[in-house]
View 1 (cartoon, one colour):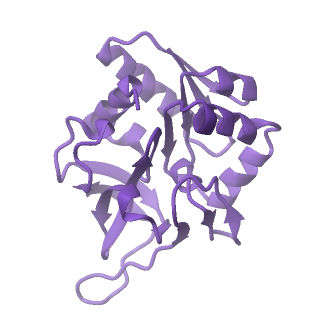
View 2 (cartoon, rainbow, N blue to C red):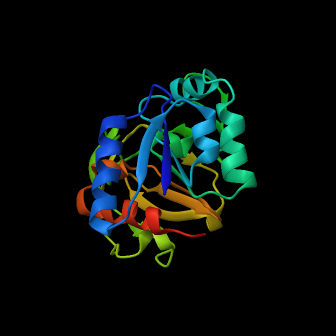
Amino acid sequence: MRIAVIDTGAGNLASVLRAFRRAAGEAGLAAAIDVTTRPEDVTAADRVVLPGQGAFAATRHGLDALPGMEEALREAVERRGRPFLGICVGMQLMAERGLEHGSHPGLGWIRGEIAPMDPVGPDASPLPLPQMGWNGLDLAAPSHPLLAGVAPGEHAYFVHSYALRGGAAGELLASAGYGGPVCAMVGRDNLAGTQFHVEKSGGLGLRMLGNFLRWSP
């Protein structure tokens, strides 16, 4: 099994690579997991991962700076149906557009846009941004294969100030509460994305990565 982890210059690549290798080992799966900037590696991969951290614009520009990479993504994911996982800003790029540092097009794989959060606490005072730290998951689609073995309320690690707005109900797999519900995970068909850093989410994250490696949508 070949997994291509795309390097846009804006991802937490070392942690992602370590987490995937550990998840593969714990699942007993033989997997070649490679960080790449080469489109041909993406089209040849059995699974594709797009990490990201920081700003939507930076990750979008990083993807645009890799000649042929978006076309390779579309070939592998849209036309060949390879399983895809977007992590944090990588998940955000699945949306129609992002509004961080201007308006920038996403990949258009899920409905909605990435907009600034405006969380308010029970006393009507603003909550701090970014949302940083552990938060419990409310599972909208607990039967999804990537959520196998994940219990409602389990905690994942978040760092973000922007979130999906206007998404389709059928594409929301999980949410978290931070001044109201916040999209935590999206997916449809062979696509999945986590707003949280699955690679930093301890045992929950490793289970989900193992599920992704076994996933046959």
